[in-house]
Image (cartoon, rainbow, N blue to C red):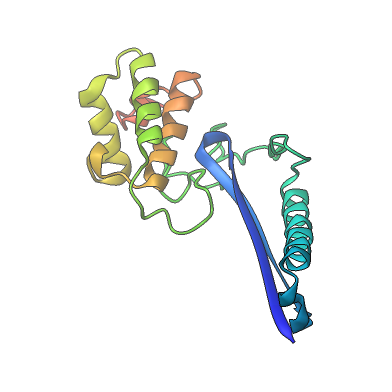
Length: 182
């Protein structure tokens, strides 16, 4: 007997730099004589791979070649109308490092991606009165480190805060901790 193991996994991106994934592994026993007919072996592999792929796609809400169905769960609120992904707030209207919309896969200890940092800069440029110096100050107050040292999870929380400021849900002064109420 021959053990045949086929696996498939997929990770899909979601709004605000989140993601979700699924994987499946199938294992079957086949007669070792199938090795004499490579075409038949390939057909069996292709069939199992198709089953694995279909299962993963179904788990992720993907139909055929279409994009995944976006998550429709409303964000939690931290009591002041500012969503932060888990209901916790750091008390100053900005999001805490643990209260971000991270992807839930791992601890967020890897560096912020170039895409995240580009989005941070794009958001910062769109907020009147922010500027690089105040962005660095905000980063220092939120995470105790400079912008260039942010992890992926930190960058996600910073993006959430900048979006809240841009949308007027949080004032820039409140995000910077300058004592203005949210």
